Image (tube, rainbow, N blue to C red; front, side):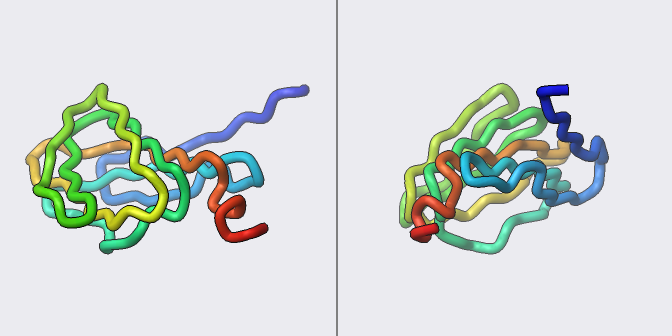
Length: 108
């Protein structure tokens, strides 16, 4: 087989899992229930968030919070302060795609 298969958990509880971590791209899968949040941090690459279900609440740097529904793809530039949470009843599920890999920015 030439292709590689990667799997992710299909759950309704809090889940943060690395799916792919290589020199080209990092892909993480996340599930957050109401009230769950990621720790405040800075983007370590060019980041895309693909919202599969629920609504993501996002605050970048000092801007006001914005909420984006499922079907949204968000792009967050490198070195932006991020606050990500689920403030809604529905489960939030999304993928985080970092391209290029953070290794590119860390100097290898």
